Length: 301
Image (cartoon, rainbow, N blue to C red; front, side):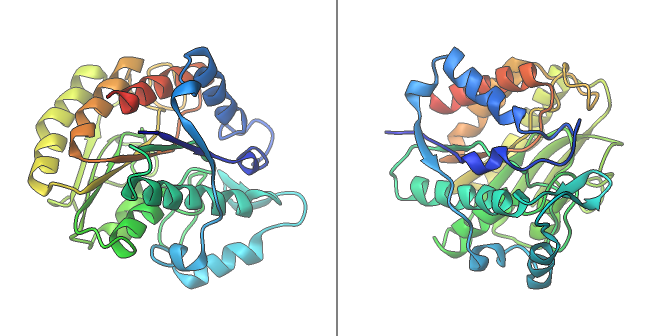
């Protein structure tokens, strides 16, 4: 069965200023690694559509969506917070990033593909129900998960987030949703400073101290994530695939290596079809290698 690789040229047009770490070259690094590792022949490409307003409003407040549309500039940059800005192409890119997760969900649940990777930007997991932050505008993985729950009527959906930063937006959106289980790791204390309060059987968010590496990460996955997923038995799994916990990524202080991303992906595959969506990862070589390990595991028969 085919495996979907979903992206769009519009993602390369969104920029937040010279020197910003969340830059178009991140997607170029994925494309380069696809070719160099000969994985490009093993995926089927799809163009990301724009998300609909109905799909966005499952996870975002109408007033917030309207505000972003008003703020979108015709030229130059508009700052949303000290780290997050919009250029004239940002809103269209954000709509397609969320739309990619919807398309991936539809393709997987229609059994047209075995799984999907959404090579998108801007990322999404910091976007709360009514707040843009941390380079994020719409919560892409949340839009996909909500589409699975509401449109496809699934009863149990899980999100696994291995980005170095806590997915505060995803937790904000789904904290009270019993049909969704979120499992995550993140460096703490660290931006955005959340994730340690309000843990529950549906929010298995595990902080890691700076300097933690493969052993600590794999212990959390084995001892906390996997038992929670076994109990929950999701019908579909989404991944917030941030690769910035890599030891070579200077934006943070965890010490994962390429193989950890392949290993955790292999552990997660037994919980149903996977839709994976790009989040962080800012050192381009480490990003490409980590992505390749993740994709290789997703493609295993």
